[in-house]
Amino acid sequence: MNAASRSNDAAVIRISQFVTLIGFIILWEVSARLGLSNVTWTSSPFRIAAEFWESLTSGELPRHLGVTLSEAVAGLALGAVVGILLGMVLGVSRLVGAIIEPFIMALNCLPRVALGPLIVMYLGIGFASKFALAFSLVVVPMMINVFEGIRSTDPVLVNLLRTVGASRMQTFFKLLLPNCIPWIFSALRVSISFAMIGAIVGEFISARAGIGYMIDTAAGAFDVTAMLMPLIVLMLVTFTFDRLFVMLRNRMLHWRPADQR
Amino acid sequence: MTRDKALSLSIRGLSYALLDRSKTMRPILDNVDLNVREGEFVSVVGPSGCGKSTLLNFISNLLPVQSGELEVLGAPVRSFNTKVGYVFQQHALLPWRSVIENTELGLEVKGESRDERRARCRDVLAQMGLAGFEDHYPSEISGGMRQRVSLARTLVAEPEFILMDEPFGALDAQTKVLIQEIFLQYWERHRRSVLFVTHDLGEAISLSDRVVVMSARPGRIIADHVIDLPRPRNGEKLRSDPRFIEYHDLLWSALRDEAANAMQVAQ
Image (cartoon, rainbow over all chains, first blue to last red; front, side):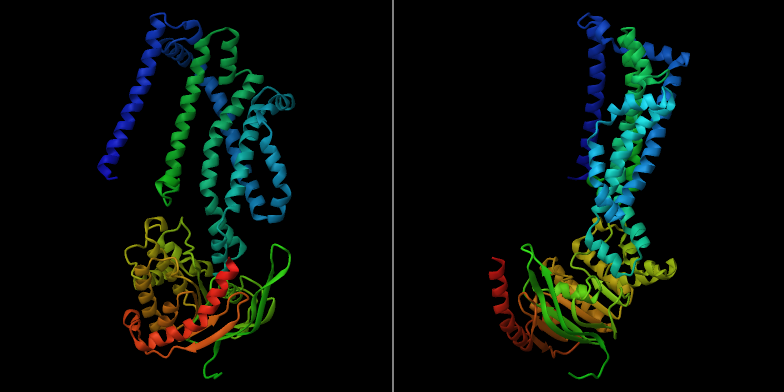
């Protein structure tokens, strides 16, 4: 395929996406206005936008969003760091890795959001419990990915490093670590939404602020518009994070063919 | 055997056996004797699975010796020796490193300064016909170029003894001939000791001073012929030389029964 037809494809994709989005919003709005759908159940884009504006200008939305994001980002950051370090220790030490492997896999099979009530019981209804829940959702997949990334190292490359006289440290920094960078990136990408899930679920269980709290409160008031608005905001924020992350990853993994990043 | 020059490699009675799936010891190498003199280019040919590559793993210290004696560059093998270079069957390039960063790996591990190693790498890459590709990544260049980078990586460290495990085996026929030419020219200028493993008889004859034939598993040395063809050699002309054909027939007669055996074992 030549460059011209590829950029042509890209334009077709962008336009189709734009039309789909606008079409969906218009359809939703029109059906609400014509009474085809019941706004009590499904609200309407206009109502959600108005709700958004009101909440934004009153400072409510920024405050709740700030709470949720700080929980999620803190959980993501610590979960990623701890997960990467644990994964490396397990990957590098064959013995420790072999001993602990079934425990990690069992932990991975645990639906960790179900830990929520227990964590809230231990840590209270403030920041700590949401942070801990986000952390617990992030740390295990990070650890497993790094572990797999290190174990997937091509044995021929390990032999190469040995034959050029590399020490264990050199082998780690020149081979094992760079080899698991793509694995770290793919784990980080799913972890962004895991961290958000952790924070929101924590807020559902018990909280005084946050997007999850906003949704829960609106549900109590049977206000679909006020439930959908923070949900959509959170989706857009997380989506933006994901896009920024993909851009960063593509820069860092420029040595890989585009379809393997 | 004459000892007019120092030995780069001396193997006496090397045997090796592995436990197979049914938990019985299966011999892989059987009492191998082999010398490589300093500056000599020796090829080992043999049917697939005969333990040729295993032999290189002992010499490079990737495998510990089970029984027999092994001296490399005048000393028993106890650790990885950076004076011994190893060119793998696969190009074994690190995909996140550019061509020049891959080439400098060995020098980097040794702790040589960046400017020094870059200059040396550029020089060797140019000799391999890779000038202008220094900053490309392995995924951006052809298989033949990758294998030349792999060669450059080994050669730039100026090893005294080079082990090569079917380095051109995975290349298409035309690329293979071109890379053999490049390598042959390099070798004829520098004359390092080489132990070259291949299953391609023509390749072995056109490159080597001596060709050793190994039997089907368990590998033994069953023939050892000096290739008395003048250097510098030209691979293409050589192949129509009557002496080349004579050597080919001679070595093939030693090899063919073994190849047939190996096929039966495999079936």
